[in-house]
Each structure stands twice: as structure tokens, then as C-alpha cells.
Length: 528
Ligand code: GDP
Image (cartoon, helix red, strand yellow):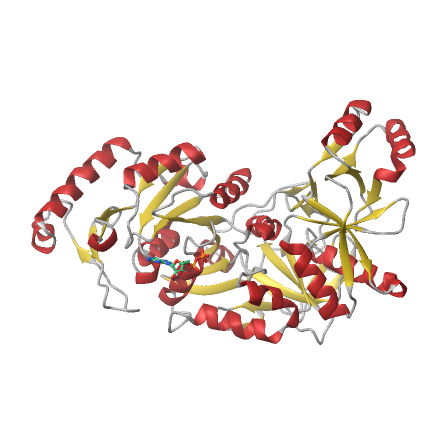
């Protein structure tokens, strides 16, 4: 195996998806703890706070206690290198989350044992399904009163149309939660509530009939465990690597992240079974991770992490080849070569200049706005990674500066935020006020506060009487021209210059679709 193939086979790039409050932050922290990347639980939050304290624009985030921006954490475990891409959990920031999911090879879905599948879990799962991203499920908070495991499993099966196989089986729940039986390694793992952050190795067993179980567990608990596992094995498919990797089957682990319980089993499961970097779809050909030449794409841009600089960081997912510091990469959209000297890797503790990086790794490339979401970088070949989407915003407002003299400055700020992917901007073909589109209401507040903090402009968002934005595409030039002529006042360009129809309401949109059948009114658009 070449060095490249070896590096590829050891990479695990994944994200955690969850409904807010299910325990994603806690699980992230514990994964880092087990991965040896942090000494002490609590560090993720502490680090987050330090970082936040540095930048003004995250004031909203701090006040509301939500995490607006996704970050990357790299750590090693069992000979694997994990890149964990954090996704903001708040539903208002789902677009960022969606794009982050285009950069991972697998996902961990955390559910609350008392709640099962919640709204946000479902939405995020659907995004994973679009790309057949394999999923491991972690059923958290088993130390609390939870639902019956059979009930939870059947809910996952029916709500997600996904086969489920238990990787572990819980022994009791709530106050009587004693631990789990690891069905993959035939091991009993008992929960010791007094242990704090120590890592429990588990007790080897010789199957479920091992008399050690009877020694270690109360009789009724062993009897129930044996009965339930027998039933579960009868009812549910066994673990099948291929079915999991194809996204058809999810192994479920039961645990309690806050008690470190079940986390190690999950991590071992990821190390062993989660897919290494996958071939990436691109136009005109799919790129294999073990190709010698470097390729990658930008899935996220974060501006002004340091308010004193106008720099942005483009998050690039490497898809193939071995990156070495100083590599000259071609920026396909502009056709320009760029020497990449100052890319950073995101080790869990800190950021570090990347001397080298491999497929599956995420590099941050500082730039002044040249790199945008969806951009492809290669060592020369003209290809373009596909599948990094823009979503039609669900809320549209007009924006005006308090001081009319500052219109130009405001526009500049809006364009920057659009390139960053924080919001979308639509420039009406007629009329002066630009329209801003977001996925959730909270984003308007974040934007207003960033416009003020970073650009010193007081701006007001106002209702625009608009209900939907749709990208307009067609091969029929004649009909397009007619459409533009008749609908000029409802048309705008996005920051890439693509044509967008701004509909006043559902009727307006339907009408346009009926009158111009050759046009496509799209809810998503691929970044180019
Ligand atoms: P997130 O919103 O998904 O990131 O969730 P957090 O990790 O912040 O957890 C939400 C709440 O659930 C916090 O108060 C945690 O302390 C709590 N929590 C997380 N894991 C567990 C667990 O295993 N058991 C119990 N009882 N509480 C937990």
C-alpha cells in the first residue's frame, strides 16, 4: 500500500447530527476526551468561549448560547485520524449544516432516549440520505427515564425508512441503568457513576450465557437482557458492513454521553467500520481519493474570525492526493493558480499551519475573498466538484442603511456575507433596495449585528412583501427573454449574477410556472 493509500484508509471524516439538546456538544467533548485530544471534559465549551470572546460579531451567539459557526476538530484514536466537523444545531443555521454534510463521509446521529427522532434529526437525516451518507446512531441519556429500546428502534425504522441493528443493548434505564452489553465485541460494560472521566475497558464475556453476567448483574436484569437480546436478534438484521456503508442500515449504540458511557464503543465502531474518504462526484468525472494529484472543494467560508483583519478562511475538503505546503493549486472558477502556503489544520487543541494534508482532511485557507463556497481546487485538471448546494431562502427582507450615504458600503458588506454563505443577497433588476434572504429569522439579527460590528453601518431590515425566491433556469432563450420582459419588477440577480424570481406569494409563483412552462424555478442551486 502506498503512503497515500495508507493515509486514506486511516481517515474518518464525519459529522454529528442531532436535534438541539440531544447531547451533541457533550458527545463531541467525550469523543475528544477518548481520542486523547483533551484532558478534561468541559474543554470544548471553554475553548469555544475563549474564541468567542475574541470576536465581537459573535455577540449574538454568546447572548443566545447557540453555536452559529461550524468548526473542525482533528484527533487520533486506534490508529485512525478522525476529522469531526461540528455543525450548528440551531435550525436557523441549517444551510451551513447542510453544506458541512457535503464534506463528510459518514455521520453520527445522536438522539435523546426519551424523545427519539425529533424534527431537526429528521431534516438532517434527509440531507444525509441525499448523498447516502452512512449513519451510526447514538441513543443518549439512557441514565434518565428513556423509552423502550424496541420502541425507539422501530421509530427510527419507520420515521427514517432505515434498517436498524443494535450494536449494544441497554441494561435497565434511568436510575436502574447498569450499562450495556456490547453485541459486537461480546463484552459487558458496566456504568460506574463515580468514575468521572476515567475510561472503562469493559468486561470480556463469552457470549450472553457467560456465568459472569450472573455474578455481576442482578438476576432479573440478566434475565431481561438475555430475553431482549434474543428477541432483538430475531427481529433485526445483523450488522452488515456493506449495508451500513451504502446508507441502508444504521447500528445503534445506547449510552450516556455525560457519564462517558457507550462513547468508546461508538468510537471503536467508527474506527473499524465508518468509511474512509469516498470517491467524490465531479464534473466531468468522479475523483478517487487515492489519485496522486491534489483536489478539493470549499464547503464553507468564515469571514472576519479576527475583526481586525478582513481575512476569511475557506474550509476546503481535500478529496485526493497529498497536499504539501506551498503547493500550487488551480482555482477552477477563476482559472488562476494560487500558491497555498498558509493553510491551517484544525487540531482539537489549536490551529496549526499545514505542512501536509491528506484526502478527508479539512484545511483552512486564509484569503481575501477569492475563495467561495462550492469552488474547486486542483493541481491543474479542469474539473468541478458537484453537490454543494445553495438553498432558496425561506425569509426575505429589504435592507437599508440608516444613513442613506452609506448604501454602497452596505452593499459591499452584503456581498461579503453572501460569499461567505451567511445569507443571500438579491439585487433587483429595477429598484434600489437590495433584498436579503435567510433560512431562519435569527439570521437577520446576526446579520444586523455583524453589519454594525464589522462595517460600522447601522442598517434596518424591513418586510419586503416577498414569499419565495427561485432560481430561474431554462434552455429556451426566447421564453426566458419574454419572461424577463414581463416580470422585470419581480426579478433579481444573486451575488453570482444568476437570475432569481422573487415571488410575492404562492399564487404569484404558480402563475409564473404555468405561464412559462419551459422555465425551471429551482429551490436549490449548485454553487459554481
Ligand atoms: P446539544 O444541544 O445537542 O449540543 O446538547 P448538549 O450536549 O448541550 O446537552 C444538552 C443537555 O443535556 C445538557 O444539559 C447536558 O448536560 C445534558 N446531557 C447530555 N448528555 C446527557 C446524558 O447522557 N445524560 C443526561 N442525563 N444528560 C445529558
